[in-house]
Each structure stands twice: as C-alpha cells, then as structure tokens.
Image (cartoon, rainbow, N blue to C red):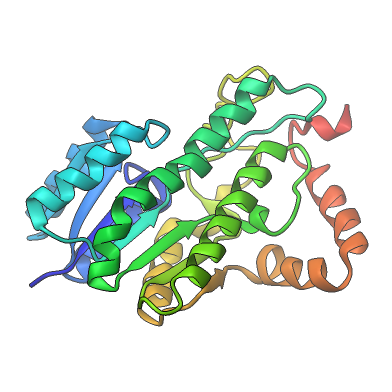
Length: 269
C-alpha cells in the first residue's frame, strides 16, 4: 500500500516542492493550505502525471482546521506515515516598533500550527512508526535582528520537536527538525512589517538562493535516513550554527553586519 504524507503550507514554495517530490516517489500526498484554488491546481497537475493527491483547505492557526485536516486524511486513507509541518510566515520590523499582533500572528501560524497538526496526527504516526517534520530555519538557531517574532516562533518549534523526539525514543516515532538557509520562495514577499501588513516584495536576489525543489529533495532524503536534524547551506546555515556554539558574540556581530545591508532594513533606523 502506498504511504501517506501530509504537508501543510503546500500551495507554494517549499511545501509545493515537497508535494511534487513525494508524489514523484509514489506517495499519496495530502495538501493543506489556506489557498484552495492553488491547492486544486497542484492536485490537477499531479493527477495528470498519474499521482494521487488530496487537498484540504487549512488555516493552521485554527485548531479545528488542523483537526479537520488530519480527520479527513484518515477517513480517506486510514493512516498517516509522514507529517510535514511546513506552513509559516515571516516578518521584518524592530521589536520596539512592531505591533504585538504581528507576534501573535507568527506564533499562531508557525508554532501553534505545528503543535495543533502534530497533536491530532500523533496517534496515527505512532501506529505507523512514522515521521514528524518541522520545517524551521536558521532562525531556529540564531536570533535574527528585525525578525524577533520569526526567530522566537522557530526556536519554539525546534524546542517542541526536540522534546517530542526524546519522549518517543522507545516508540519508533521519528522526528526531524529541518532548517533551510535562504531559500527561493515567496516567504519574504508575504513577510509582515511593523503594522501587520505584508512586505510585498523580496529584499534579496532570489536567484542566488537554494531552490525550493533542492530543499525538498534534501528533506526527503533526511526523512528516509531518519535524521534528527538537517541544516542546509554552508555559510548561512552550518557555519552560522557552528559559530553560535563556539563564538556567539562574533556571530552576533556578523549577523548584524550581514542583515544591516539588506534593502529596506529597519536596522538603519
């Protein structure tokens, strides 16, 4: 029987790339996101390729939506083998200027969305001895200036999933924390600024970033290998995590210097 993977934030970026990666590998893919039209376009395209996809409109910040995503998946396929918590939003504003509604929004989507989906999927994943994946960021290891809510939410996800892994050392459940570096996706376009409105554009050259498709391939391999942690890219990812452990004050200075050169950064205020 084909295995079942549930992917949140599946309408674009890394989530969409994961949908195609797992479908190509023969999985039944369940796609959750707020934009039903985009999900249906992906479903249609996958169906034309001979792949099986099921879509459920899902706002992960809503607990009932997360419960419904899991219940509909189990009703259709009777099992879940992999849950990939990928849905997320970013922000760009100094903490002194940001409206706290931005903090709440990021925690609701990034952290609580992961908690809600994981809670309702857990009984089925324990039964299948499956995998839970949290797509975080280097921001889960490093405090990024002008992204306090984003880093806080990603640190929280990492802490939650690391704890879940330890709790389930004897159950066969696999838990992966996947931290892409800068990835070509739409997350910077939809990042919230200080008043909660979307940024509406990327301050970076997306062409020089790792593609969402490459990230998806790496995550697929990491799940198969039952890795606990995946940190992608050398400079922004692995080197930064190493410096955080060994030379934290140096990393603070390098991070500030790097991000202060970003177009439109509030760090220059």
